[in-house]
Length: 190
Image (cartoon, rainbow, N blue to C red):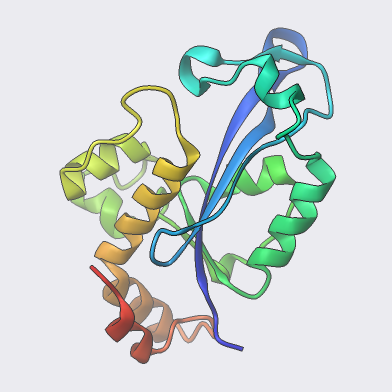
């Protein structure tokens, strides 16, 4: 099986006292070329106490309307889509946590944790936001208004593709079995 590359981004609302616990509200997945694989709102499984509308743009009608999909259906669909493939994103541990889906660390490419990006911005011990990474490393603006998971997934994907060869070479040198084969590089649109 040939490993595909997918980028993911989740937008969350708050549940529980003060709305401090994150719950999935919208999710987007794009393929290696940035084409939309999934972009949908997700029905809440608990009472939403903070829609975080100023940041997320999410309002009750998005989550309770006909176009919102059940959490269980999304969880299963995403798990099936990413299984056995490379997953790219920013702070993937958070997205996978709200989804309740495990994914092998060797198959993740988290731009928030990628040390060469952190070193380039002279913050080797800190997680750098996607907006800052995109601007500083690609002169690309993102997240200027409400969060858009498609925009975020594509920005993370573009960051990954900007250093794809070095990233995958480092994984190959570490003898991880998940490194993309060099023939993949010729298909990259950097």
